[in-house]
Image (cartoon, rainbow, N blue to C red; front, side, top):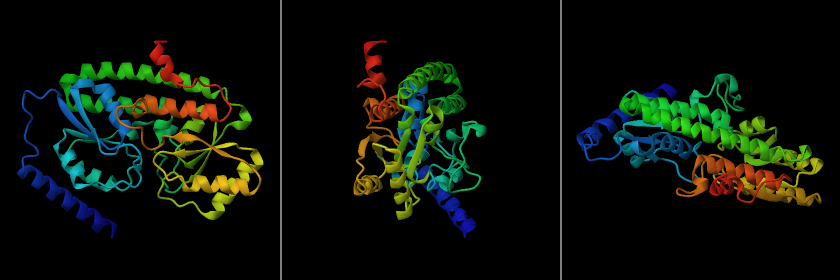
Length: 328
């Protein structure tokens, strides 16, 4: 059955590419076009990395915007057209885009397609809870791991557009330095959270790399994928933990329903323990385009600052953004 489905996807992909060619989708750009290359990415995090590295030389389109869950996302006809028109497609891999994976693998037979998330060192990856021989894909939650992805984006752009290799090298060097600053800020702010308060309760297990990097225990209601279901027993066990350990704040996520988090709060209240929502975190998607939180640095800064403040740590109201605005 799996082989049959895979063969069908190959046929459909080939048909789509043939149709695109007949409609002129692959017509070369004119010399007047400003960007040297066009790139389509799956997630907004990868899109931001491509923009940071490529600057004005690369026109970048992300398929998944704010609040979109990549675990469950399926390609649309307009997505397929965009990917076929682009010079290359950058996707995450590590089974993040579970519903797109077969299509993207088949597309790689016809287009330049790069799974940049898989550049993260294998010995630094966390095993997936639900699938053998797979890993937790949320590597962007640790800026030191995200460096590997930025490097993979630089290499992919240089392969597509060798004439721009120097531009991409310079862009990557600058952005990697920014990630070092971000990582240092995160470590300093999160270190101020009292040890007994370093319990991060979220809607799903997107923060395991964050927890490992910054010494937090992470408890997700759902598994690594939002496709997994949280059972009543699991929620009751988490309520037990929240009450017994005196957890005072839990967090919702911008791309995941808050229903299960509300169940935790109500369960704790029924036992006489008050727990509040510490804030909304960006997990599988960034904020709105054009905002600070709509960049990778802004996304992580928002999470770090919000977690530190909600769990009793010391963080400025504007986070690292305030320091950047002040020029410090």
